[in-house]
Image 1 (tube, rainbow, N blue to C red):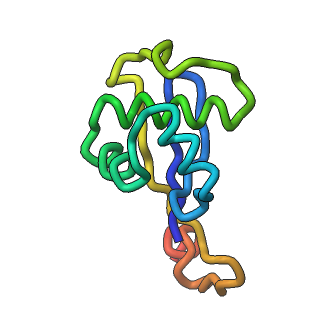
Image 2 (cartoon, rainbow, N blue to C red):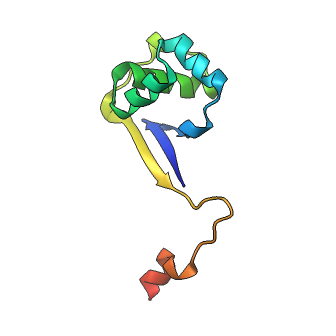
Length: 104
């Protein structure tokens, strides 16, 4: 299982597109005009409107009051990182853990 972590300068947010709700999709559409598919594809393709909508969505979801058109940042300050996490309830093989293989 993987989770995406979005960072922008000193800010960071977890983001999981599989956890988006219909209300989230409506908020994204209302603020940016992008459909959910257009938004997700646009983020993958580094489309400027989709990136602006992503940061707007994450900030407003965190409770910040900000307008889409006020979102501006250096593209180099944006990080989109996939972080692998064990699936819930999954057994972790201690023989494959980094501590064991390093000592090994």
